Length: 266
Image 1 (tube, helix red, strand yellow):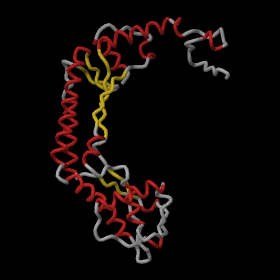
Image 2 (cartoon, rainbow, N blue to C red; image 1 turned 30 degrees about the vertical axis):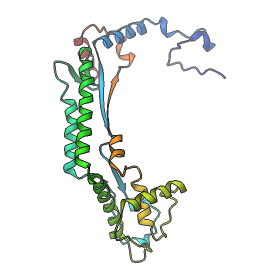
Image 3 (cartoon, rainbow, N blue to C red; image 1 turned 60 degrees about the vertical axis):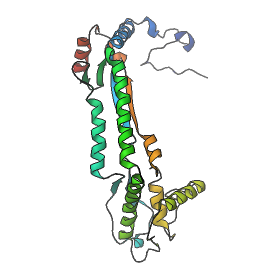
Image 4 (cartoon, rainbow, N blue to C red; image 1 turned 180 degrees about the horizontal axis):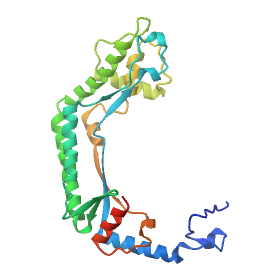
């Protein structure tokens, strides 16, 4: 194995690189200063980025991109994105996520392009608040979508795509549309398509049940039952650092020093 040398990078282990002229990162004064600043900054606090995953579920449908014979369609259709929940439900879920940011104020943090810089003294409080917000979201989901409500929303958003295909189908299309779609029918076909390794490119537009197969594949990533959906909803709080290049020629000793640095980096 031959080591690769990048002249724009410093070597951590020059004695192993085969190039004795390569400067070691540990001997560079700028690196020592930057690392010292990073340590002092970590003592003061950390940048936090918040990410909420799994709440908004949707699928896109663009019949013009699929390998469907043109004579099977009456008209071109514009691409659509169909969401699992109606707008009023989405708004309520967004309100819950906004509550996360209400934790941050002038007394415990300041906002930057890297995220909120949270003072180290408030780390334990943030951890507790984060758990509380996660529980609030879990409770809302349980109360709103229990007793079959989630299954209803899933069927409804599945049906919207199915109906769109039906409205666009031409007389020449060989498709037979189902009068009633049940969750069990979707689940059974999911299993069959997964076992056969079927994809959007392998199912045949000439199949009588093509629209149903298409919709099952389009919604494959969306949980069909509440507990599976709820298990995918997570509030992630990631502590971020800053690249050492930004810390080479400055001095970090106070919160105000960090604030001035982030203003220069906007």
